[in-house]
Image (tube, rainbow, N blue to C red):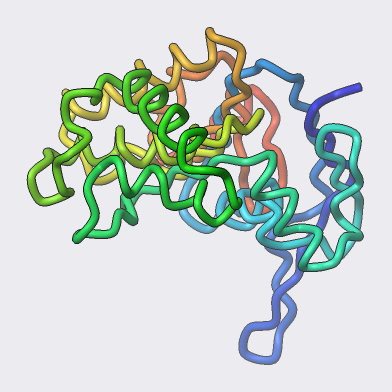
Length: 230
């Protein structure tokens, strides 16, 4: 069974009295341990698909099975449990709390999960070391470069050891060197066995993944469609 399985998923929105089909009959399988890029131009449905994959939204039609659980029919509370247990999020904006150190930013979601202090400390130090920032644990975001801040955000996403890492335009705010460092880190995390789904409009970023799925007008485009990403 696939780790991620979407079957004929559609999502509708109302805009100006009209119904807009943000996703149109999308079916997609992702195996555990894959590194997949979801790519496409602005308005193609990437953000809507990301929200569904991340259990931030549910489809209007179709089913979404994540690690054997049909999440399309779950209550908001159950969706929150799935997010906390199974998904680590990395966004374009790092969303770090400016007054907290790198250590405290990474620790925060573990506090919300009710873990004891020693378990939290071990998890934070382990994940900061994994992203190459063990020596920056006492630094606040303003004392870190953009690339280092994104590494802290990745460490925060990994601290609870989720099986799925969902990265939405994670290099969009970074210069080329910092972006390559982050993408190399995502590749290394995937090689260590983590499932990584990367959302991007940039074909150069998408090529870091092992498989590219292109969205166009809410549908998965054929491999030879020539869809322009940017």
